[in-house]
Length: 467
Image 1 (cartoon, helix red, strand yellow):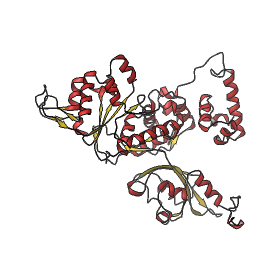
Image 2 (image 1 turned 180 degrees about the vertical axis):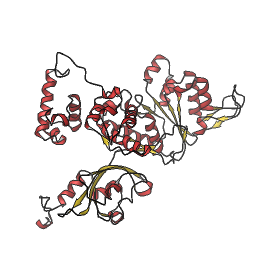
Image 3 (image 1 turned 30 degrees about the horizontal axis):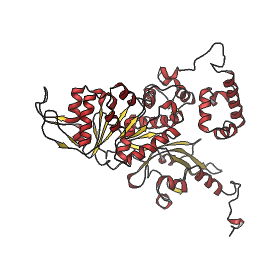
Image 4 (image 1 turned 45 degrees about the vertical axis):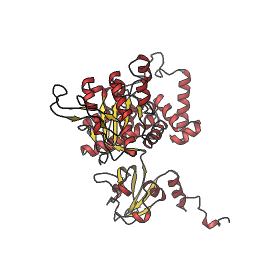
């Protein structure tokens, strides 16, 4: 039976707001309103899907009800007076069963014709990522139940594949190898595998194999008995024992000597270890995760790694992409680090300027996400306002430029690239700099458009002013 005309939404959204409701759901936004008393009035279907909280659980409750203590999230909608513009929603909310979500969005006060406050309208979306334990620098063993959490942040295709493989690895108990350049988040990925797996209730023990000489590494892995060597004044359990019924993470696995590879291979195969200087076999139940930034196949070819050890540690592989291959994630990562540093340092930095963000997008990032985090930490030391500017960034980041060819005033672009750059600029201007519409007009994805704008140094703040 066809619906009657009266049940169909009027496509003029000023007459029928149901069209806007459908738009919010399509964009996967959570939309809500708050009355002048600070209580939730409405909670959209999208908000229900994102949080798992039903309208009946939310409406009538204070808008700060779901904010994690100290977090600046939905509670910013509790504004007693009208404001001139939107305020930023940026923080963590608590939902059902202790689950936490990082959300970003905006809230704006609504006033009547007389300028009196009517309430607040807000929207938010969840920031994509995996919640994993926060590494504790002063401790090698991190309890899986620790409340200190952080994220692997990323919404692009490269990180989507990494997240997919992390989840698959967590469903199994096989040995997994995390590969990637230094600073790409290999240990975070390993912690995510542990936290999402069946061993999450057990310990996560991390060892950097490159930080210890072979003599000390053996004692670190297997433990020792009193008198086994000079300085062994008491019995000490190794990390293979400490990780019992949990996960052992060996970082920089490519730096282990062939002799140590034999000993570790035997322990993993027989599930027993013997402490240095001891004569007793100790049973262990450990899942091994390893990481490297080296080419292990080449190490095998060079004789630096045993072939049987290589196949033992590389049962399943998770690749962490370098930051230069996932530049579309830089804005989200910057927001993430700013939020964390605000919370840790008690600051109120609102964000980063367009020019400073462009500097970050122009950088090659040899140190990857770790280098980006350090750049934002550097900015927190120097910034004197609420917005990070280019001069707040480290010198090597803010001064990087494309190689300049004096014979080409276009900064090293060839004729084809110059024409493509002008084509992109014309499309942006034709679409009033709407990125989605521009990408459609050009017949490319938003990511491709983003990369072209970065490559050609197209900055909206400059070109829209005719600079």
